[in-house]
Length: 206
Image 1 (cartoon, rainbow, N blue to C red):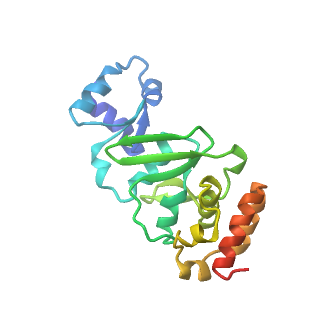
Image 2: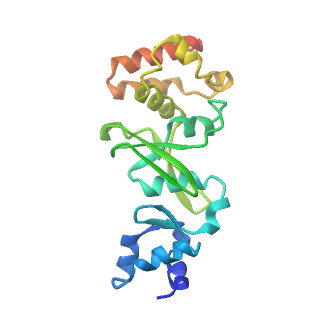
Image 3: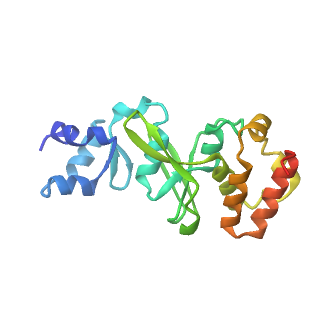
């Protein structure tokens, strides 16, 4: 089988894995993938996952790749907060939340980090359209905030939360406080409730 046959079959998926290849061609020789990576015809994303170098310059491709190579997961934490303009920092690493164990991956598309959360807390995400025909899972602003406060124990004082430098205009005009409180109750965590109360107090939202 030629590389171009594989490309024609999987290019539109952006990312594909070895199992998909075997389902298509059961007698496929896996060594072909290694050879095509060495020839820069393919990009290896992690064990068994591949993409095409043509996509490297696609805007926001990291968010789509993040969803695909470690599932179930959704983009959250610092990446989502930066996307919504809640924090000022430019985020180099793509951060996500998953019900699987913590993981980190590096490839030519970037650095990908996954924090573990209980399966019952995998809510508060929505599908966003990507390149007009794909979708990816992304935390809502409120859930991204809660994931951060829940998963990073250092944010346990008023000063630490102030130093997050959440955008005041967003907090006053765009944050859905009702959703934030509803989501907080689902965590059933007094520690998180206290942190959220501090956040609301700092921004005069309670």
